[in-house]
Length: 95
Image (tube, rainbow, N blue to C red; front, side):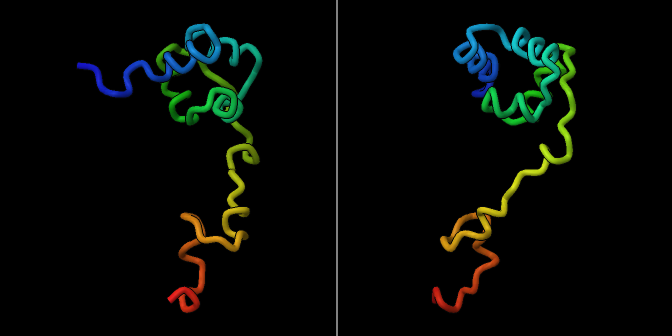
């Protein structure tokens, strides 16, 4: 019995690139694109890309340390509360 996620990656690739997921991953491998760059191009997490690449026996380039580390500083430096900075705020002024 299929679950709600069955085929979602393949469908997303088909809609966006008009080719199969295997073809686009092979193209990324031939262009020496990293999992991180593929994540940005496709719009899914690198974990999903790794899972599908492993299914097809395709290996993409590993991301450099600078690519793998996301910059969250803009979340913490903003004055508005958000899910990233709510624990680092002084709560006395909000009470």
